[in-house]
Image (cartoon, rainbow, N blue to C red; front, side, top):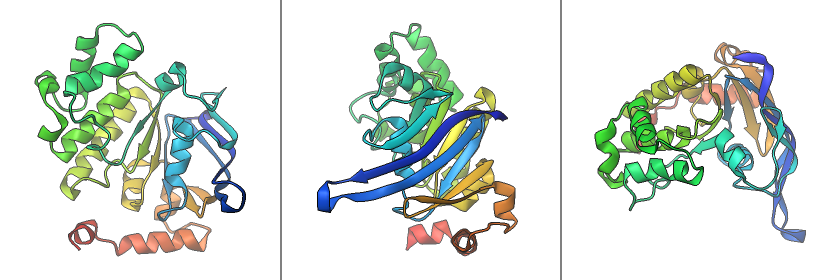
Length: 260
């Protein structure tokens, strides 16, 4: 991790939906910097604005106010090809994010076709191997895969253009508990191999402790505080809300919650 070089810059990000009396502001002066090669977590309760920040960076929401930068380059409000080569997003639901009528080979090859990148068959096969599958999977469809396998394909699709930044929206929350650790270990290995920069949204502070270097805590569209993960784990958070999240996570059983 290169702390001197900022890969993701978010400066006074504001966002509202609706107009006139129906206008609702959802982000308030959000400012963050994520270093090159850093794994940065965004945590907070549902509706706190975490995923909305990712959508602004990914170009899925484009009427924000403020400044967004990737590798020092200011992002415009439209998506262009260079931006897609730099930043990709892995969504929460791997089944919903993969075209059900396309084979895995077609899904992974499509970005290469759009960007005019050659040696497509070799790249697809290599990427499948990289995420723990193999070239024989190219002819399968998403419905033939388990949840963990589909998320491996979603990660492969995000990486096929060799981006510098991955935006991860709760990448393990839709998976069985037994599979979550496998995907987290895969993401960790891929990050170290490629010196990738991750900005990850999660509700699970256990995921933060396992994967992240630093974390920002959000509430009602604002960043309350940013701290190193060791400080979070050691109960050195400054804000009462953060301490409450840590305490709640210690009594949370994902398997029991899912069963309930």
